Image 1 (cartoon, protein in one colour):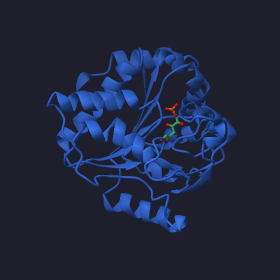
Image 2 (spheres, protein in one colour):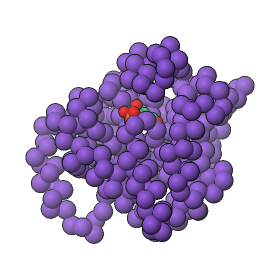
Image 3 (tube, protein in one colour):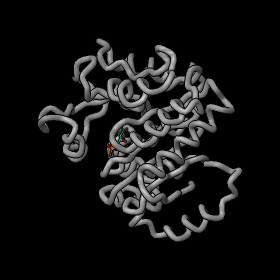
Image 4 (cartoon, protein in one colour):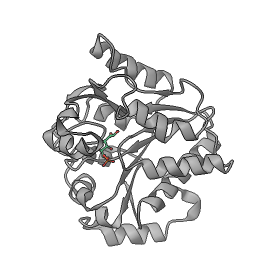
Amino acid sequence: MEVVIVAGPDQAGELVGGAVAALVSTKPDAVLGLATGSTPLAVYRDLARRHGAGELSLARARAFLLDEYVGLPTGHPQSYRSFIAHELEAHVDFASAAVQGPDVHADDLLAACDAYEAAIRAAGGVDLQLLGIGTDGHIGFNEPGSSLASRTRIKTLTDQTRRDNARFFATLDEVPRHVVTQGVGTILEARHLVLLASGAAKAGAVAAAVEGPVTAMVPGSALQLHPHATVVVDEPAASRLRLAGYYRETWSHKPPWQGL
Ligand code: F6R
């Protein structure tokens, strides 16, 4: 695992946006895995800027959402499908239907979860998966206790996650209790995992995921099992990392050709 400590979200966005651009320049039909929430916004802004500057085209790329709320009507502004449409798709040139999320309106949700797994497989798997991390250590919406082998399925959000996400809704009661999320096992099949975190509220979760034991109680710790995992954190989010000095030293001496 590589840990990169950056000054703030803008630097994280530029670094990770650069990794996406580098991937797409060698593989124009790359498959991206998209996270939602506050953290990846800097990356999406960077991708929009690169596209606007004529440096990046996602016209042949495809993308899969990590997760989606269950119970919000189609088109609800806080649905993750709407979030990605507004924050990313509106600013780049994905082909229509190139971005998919799990069908949370299907009569048979279990079948829809299986179909989502099949769609990811049929696309050749995810090349680069963006991830945030919850204050309770979740990735996707794999809450503590999620099997490290789990697949796309329905999960119940913890109270902590619902409270964390209440800032996007008028009241806590409006935050859905259920989601469909790619499983930890699904996420681990992506070829490159890039987890971003910013702010002191994430410091405990980042330290547990990066330097703690691999445990289902901290789903983010599953990144330790992955052969190509990159963790990009700002100073406050890195503040509880024991090896922060080593990560800085490693990054500052990394040969530029190596990329993320
Ligand atoms: C969202 C997702 C979640 C978030 C996490 C952090 O698609 O999968 O794991 O990444 O809850 O959310 P923010 O970035 O809003 O702090």
